[in-house]
Image 1 (cartoon, protein in one colour):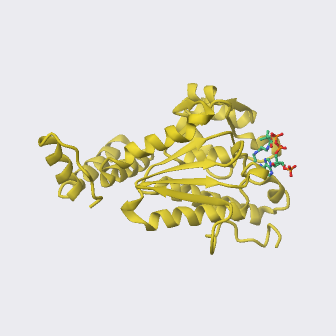
Image 2 (cartoon, protein in one colour):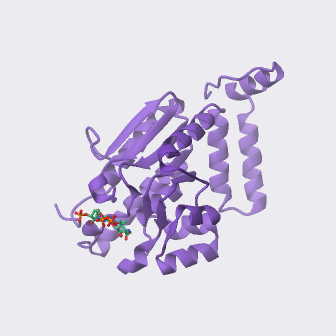
Length: 273
Ligand code: COA
């Protein structure tokens, strides 16, 4: 099947081969496993990632936080250039849409997703990390949007999410230059939240996920929704959205449990109801 004929990013059927999903308690870890190609995103990987996140979504409040990482020396070294080289505009549009669908799925999931950037996060890899709620990176990781080196631009949401994450000046500089930056430089511009020794990265990301998973899941989901939607609204409308979401949590089991536990000087065990 040629790249033009494929339906990229359609959810994979059957067992996953290019993506591993593991769940411990309420925290899931999703690992992209195509290390021989530095986890480059081809339609099969996009499809499996999409299927993996659909499956996590189907588990409801059992999944309260996730970590997304890559096997080997890369997080994701980009969309698959070998596959893209053969694409015409129609296939490229479908490929971009599949990337957008996956990014939207992660961005709108009711549980936070932390990108644990273990190595190269370039092009579609940086865009995938940007679709996550925040990014932790390993020392030695490199991030960037090198698409202009290939005669194209970011196609999985990078122009918009990088702009929103690091601001217009930094986003323009990175996208126009195609330069890779170090994890430390990414930290300095707010693209990543923290940098850890490579050996500690996954544990630190899971630790953060575990903490989030111990909080009220309905509240975390509402915060994620309001933070995301509010970004594209004016302040008045965004604050109204916040007030509505705040009010809607009252009467939930989680709100009752959380407040009662505080008043009883104990720790709430949230139900997600
Ligand atoms: N698409 C397809 N294949 C890719 C890839 C991508 N984005 N990135 C890496 N690979 C493949 C390489 O072709 C190579 O395959 P091969 O062993 O069959 O030749 C394999 O992954 C290992 O990569 P290699 O280039 O040998 O590793 P390196 O350590 O020397 O260099 C990078 C690492 C990340 C600097 C380099 O692979 C690179 O520049 N990749 C492309 C980055 C990019 O432009 N991404 C944006 C795409 S829109």
